[in-house]
Image (cartoon, rainbow, N blue to C red; front, side, top):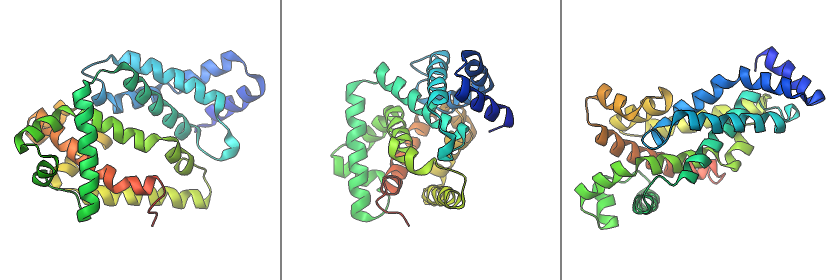
Length: 250
């Protein structure tokens, strides 16, 4: 948090002056837009970026109202979590995705989790096909259609209250160690993916690229990118869920 934002937050906590709050909002609009752009693959076919940014601004204003510097968290970290959570809620409320696709995504998630626990590794497409009793070609087509739903579910896992409470914490030595542990666990999970899956996840989450741009970069179809993203995201969810929910901390 830059000194000007910190000073403005301190001033606003004392005065509750709307003009000061608006200045904080203006200084952090870039954070809102960054979150909206990072998540655009989940809504770009259905909604407008400006609508999502508007939701993010509302969340930013709520973050300003509820931010407590005594808890040790950085304002940017706290606000980012609130903004991303609000965007997830907004996408959910729009109900853009057909019920059949949502059901398939849930079934696929459950199948991936069950097989991961059974084999202690990410299941193959053939194993998923057999487990779900779906022909492999139909499974792949459905995986492409379910990419948005699966990604949204993964984002919900990352930004649910439990994760925010236990991982978006202060700046002391314990907090630094916990952040490093988070990074290590996530890095190890990504490293365990197959090469093409790692590439898609890296370009999607760390380069904030659209599916169409990822397809061009990797020389594959956009549908294939969606398939890979679905499988990789479910694999990461299966690997990270116990850690995020506090079950298997190492």
